[in-house]
Length: 97
Ligand SMILES: [Zn+2]
Image (cartoon, rainbow, N blue to C red; front, side, top):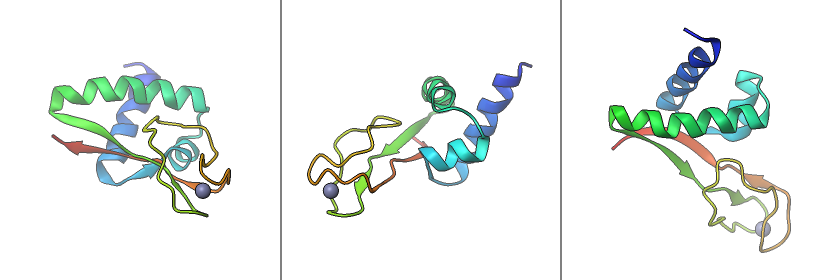
């Protein structure tokens, strides 16, 4: 088993238990943004085999409450309404279909 496989399985386990923001998950695992994006792209495909899906709840602006339409895993960090950089989320989780 390769180290990257082990880490992806760890991520799947974490996301089955609770919702995580991208940054919390990244800090938990101590990996780079690009590494986690790559892992999540693979996980999104692989969990379908178990009839699960990677759910992304889009980010919300902490200042004006605007919910971003983007469900990108790691969207740009500014509110399109008020330009605040104070965004919460997006939140990721693995749920049963
Ligand atoms: Zn805003």
